Image 1 (cartoon, rainbow, N blue to C red):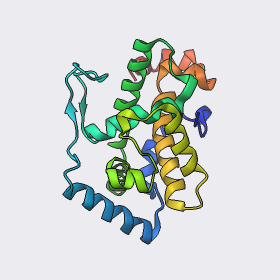
Image 2 (image 1 turned 120 degrees about the horizontal axis):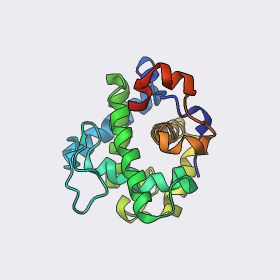
Image 3 (image 1 turned 135 degrees about the horizontal axis):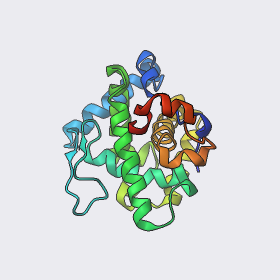
Image 4 (image 1 turned 180 degrees about the vertical axis):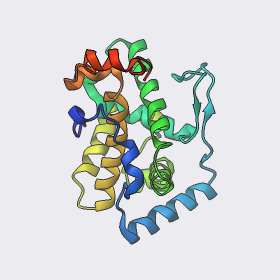
Length: 212
């Protein structure tokens, strides 16, 4: 399980990220990611946001409209979240699917609060992981993401976490940070990080807490 710091995850760190580079790739890393992203686009990889997805054949709520993540990104997070969140996810299959779908939707909504520079970096990171050639050679994930097991996803994350290559380390941090904030920041999962919820006096004084 990959949980950088769930105790601090309830307070969204997303808005702060528009003021600094998220991946801190350096010039070489930026050029590499840019090349991958262009190559992925030329190869036909989907870059258009997924929009509203049909509830048939997908975990997603058909009423939610994706404005950043594309279909490949959604599949990527469906494969990675069980490894990143681990036992924090519900065991019951339907509840588990709902938790994963809701977390992916919150990842999409959170990224919309990033500055353009960080959105661009994340788009290039996701393209790197979704493009078959770099998924195999850089991430060393041999199967397409829908066929990746939780054990394989965990091994990939651990390779990037412990890599001596800064781009991979920062890619790991980016993936786990957006995922943990989106998961542990939701009221249904506050208890997993030991957060009891906002004080009653704050809720009474600010009823909008109930609608947050």
